[in-house]
Image (cartoon, rainbow, N blue to C red):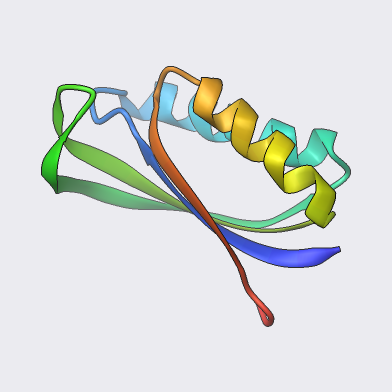
Amino acid sequence: MRNYEALILVNPELNEENLEKEIKQLSQPILHNEGRVISFEKWRKRPLAYKIKKFKEGVYLLVKFSANPLAIKEIEKSWKLDENVLRTMIVVKENL
């Protein structure tokens, strides 16, 4: 198991209730691949430098998790299939 940090940009039009559902949905691929979610931070809505999927702003989510390195492709793939996810970025973190 390695430690990772992911920054996920999601649809800014999600209300608070739907955003919480989206967070739970984004945690599922990690847990399904025998990973562990350490923390899930919701940042505020921020303007984007350029439009992404016709949105001028987005809500950032910071996820700290541990998972098997072989599962990262599967996790990233399931996030990209989610219609509310605009962009994702996963980096390896040595110390969480």
